[in-house]
Length: 206
Ligand code: DC
Image (cartoon, rainbow, N blue to C red; front, side, top):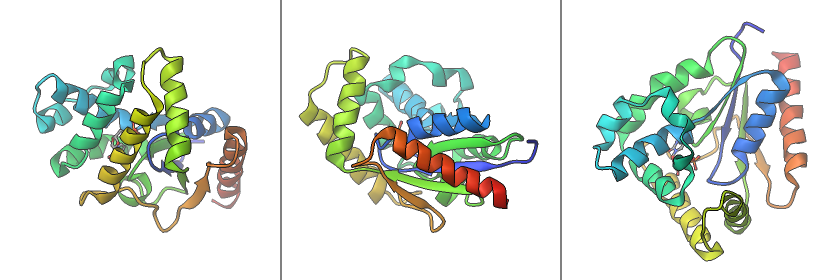
């Protein structure tokens, strides 16, 4: 496929966006971008004392690979820099170009369907209760030998939900075109199957 075809996946922290995004990308041969990593690179830079806007203007593709971006401290810093309109503006062109690249793209984040790519052919809003998301994130961190307790992870998830939802610039919310996928009570495989079905359907009618 040489035409652009975009799958936008938005939703709160640890809802399963990344897992679903990677599965769609693998199934259809699309490129995948976890846009949270862009904000994490900027957040991590601020923890080293670099001003946020300056860091956002200097983000390099290779920086997204750094495993140190996965810590809860960096997640909070990312959510803090994400409220700054100039930071969001500096990251916009890269995301838009990625979304409309030839061959198809999946982007997951908070504002893909609402701001980055409202024309995305498929839009998903993946969500789950804060408790279920905290349990999943806690297990993920434990699997990576990052030491946390469940109550701290739940507090972190709730703090980020509130900041990401209440900010003025590109707040977290479903786009009007989004299919809502609540993964609280369904296994990840079932959520992936549903997402793949929606993409397949859009492909047929595109
Ligand atoms: O998806 P994540 O947990 O890695 O994202 C980290 C933070 O980055 C999140 O709390 C808010 C911000 N973010 C954003 O504002 N817009 C996006 N498209 C992606 C992430």
